[in-house]
Image (tube, rainbow, N blue to C red; front, side, top):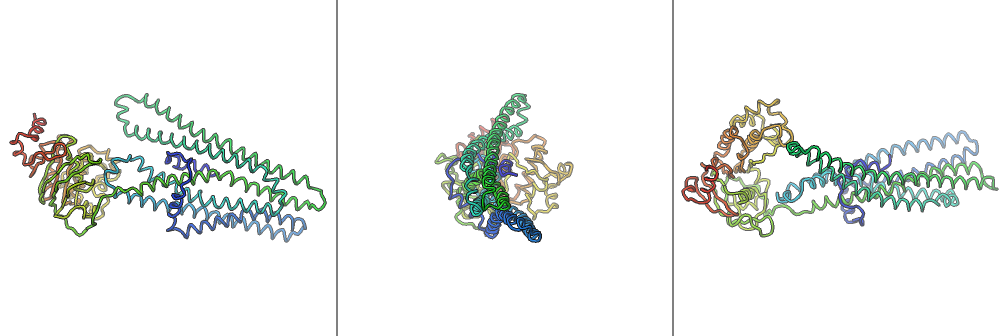
Length: 600
């Protein structure tokens, strides 16, 4: 199967959205090749196999020529058998080497992209949350999947194969000149036309692929958005309109593909015509010299067979070189995009990576300022002290800075001024992973993976047994509803937990936090989206898991925080009031305004 079909059916088209027609980035190419350093033995071995195959292929027509000129011409049947055995053995050897070369090249490519994905994922898990806020998820997924996939194509059907094809062309032309330079010059007459046609084809297919990639991106985006938002389409009865839009996008996608097929459908017949022209010129040259003094008919027949085979070996690599270079160029562009993420410095500022601290839960904010953009501060001079075991609540209107404060505790964002200490140690001196092992977060929008209830609770932590999960579920009050599920704790909750109600998902998140036994607990509006029936269970779960540990609660329902040890009221990034529920009501300030708005 021709190489262009390999490119056609890979995720390359979906991965690339930038034009490929630009000067080749040799520094990116060199960096990409350096990825093969851990597999240098396989790389060299594959290259050696390609070189051997480039030599063995052109050797076969030459042996056929010598066989006809020798044993066939002399009528030596014993010699003919030996020559045929030699050629057959060469064919078998070539087939075996071809298998190992193909397998080795693809294995090399897959090993490299496996390492790239692992390194990329490890690198991104250290990014600040701010990076993911600013970067579309689709772009990150494309970098980690489709763009990296193009690198495998470079090693399996790109640079190594290009080297083999070029070497084979040199050997084929050299063998043809060695056998007969007159025939070679005649046969090579159409080659300049082929090279010109190949250049035109290369430019045309680049433009076609660019259109295809753009349309694939549009199609993927449309389908993804509308599947996720299908309920909106149905609620507002927009099925017919969205179907019309989809037909338009799909038609453009089809047209882009047809344009690329059009380029191939013209180029391949041109190649076949030029190949046939070379063969016709060869036969004309043979017929012209037949019967001339000193010309041996058997030798001419042997030369003709050898040259016909050489013509096939000559035209096929030239025809495929355009595809090979497209694969190489797309691989480089994909690699550039991956390297751009790898070179992104979006990690936290960690002064030390201390892991020898047994955190207890004393948290101090010392005049902390936070800005997401330049000096547009969303937190201003936050100063508070929390003792181990205290239950702290933050209230305020939307945008007051409540979530920003608790995000700093787990080091999900980087603050610009001041300091935050836990048990007297600056959190910038604590290893982020070690710090987060002592913190659990229950969010308003609960995220559940497409996995079982048990796996969503433990997050694949093997140190948490199923018995411990069941015991905790009974304490929280979640065991009963879990057991009503078709498979109990092994029930798959589907993507984002859509098989569960909002209240059930929230109970799962409380249970997840509880079984990990954190020293610091963060509840980010964990009861704002649930019904009254679920609220009683959630309230019970909240009281249970906050008991005896430092807790930070962002509250939408003020009724859930009336027993907090201290309530901090935020407004425009500043703490404007603090105290107990009763004390704040007596102040007749911002907290009382919020309370009266909620309770009339």
